[in-house]
Image (cartoon, rainbow, N blue to C red; front, side, top):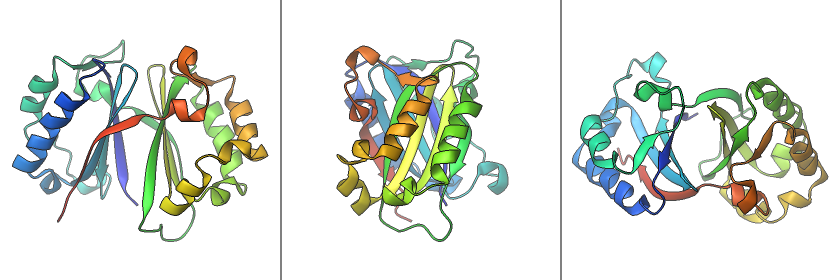
Length: 221
């Protein structure tokens, strides 16, 4: 099972190519895998920057807790475009979202999976209620029906991040059908008091809550 961290910041809209090129340069010039990093996604959602870092193991277990190679140089180069999100921000670790729910089915996960990142706003202190809603749903048949192979929920300040991992074939087949399932509708209804779209004025359906990947890297060895 891949271990993931999620970093959430503000980003200047339209700067995706610049930020992506910075990471592309340093991912090629350095070896993040030597510090246990095996992949990353950079995503944007309106004025948000999301950085999903993938590791083979929780760094608290592996002992590989150092930051990314050339972290300071990367921070300096993306600094004009990427800035802290949390109001309580004091140091870089304050940009790391806190995981409050994780679910995965028993058995070995399939090799071919797709990761979708869903973004919203969460009411303060609502994490236990959101975890309960998903816990009840994940105990039923909906995850199997949608080919879900893993789910991680995070929050940081008022931002809610939902990492949804699915079998690639199932993700494609259910992309436009999941909203029609009564069980999915119940989850959305139950989440209503606690989670809303990040930009309700620009959201017309579930797909408008999905962050856009603008850079992807995976270690080759």
